[in-house]
Length: 192
Figure 1 (cartoon, rainbow, N blue to C red):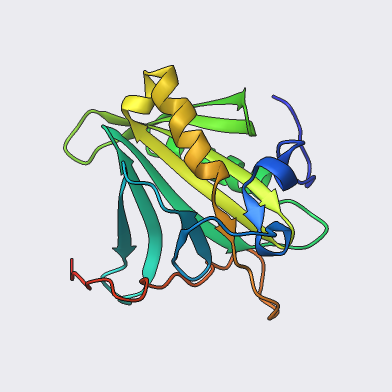
Figure 2: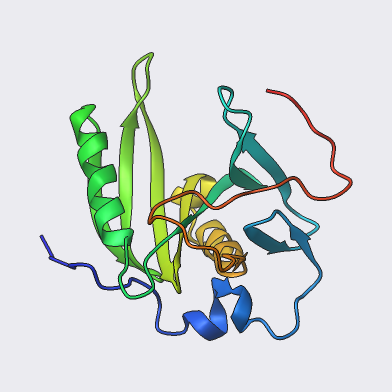
């Protein structure tokens, strides 16, 4: 097992190819504002906000594209240290404790976690966890569906992940706190 420590995990071209910090974007492409996340407008995807039933808080943004799904979440992080390696290890332990299987591989963004997650009714669902440490934030993606077996679909989902702009804000936050997502202006609220 490779020991990564608390170094930031990000592709070497993150500042020019994404995912971006709001301070790094000079001219924003036409995008949809979800509060902590901004996503360029794409005609061929559908977007859905996931709401926690107990708190009615928006907890994730999900992007669907032709049988592939990418769930996005942004968290606060220390300015000098990365948290992806620790989060990935925690995910791995959690999945394995449920009798799931995991494998850490290195992909275009750095270390990734391939997982077979047990379903309640039996069987497994497959997922790939990806993550990038930015300045004072961490962006996590969970890819499922066709992209796990189709390299072209995977490339497209990684491209969507890299097009995200994280709007961290300047207020102090404890590490690993979920950044606030909001419904875009003019969107319809659908209760779960």
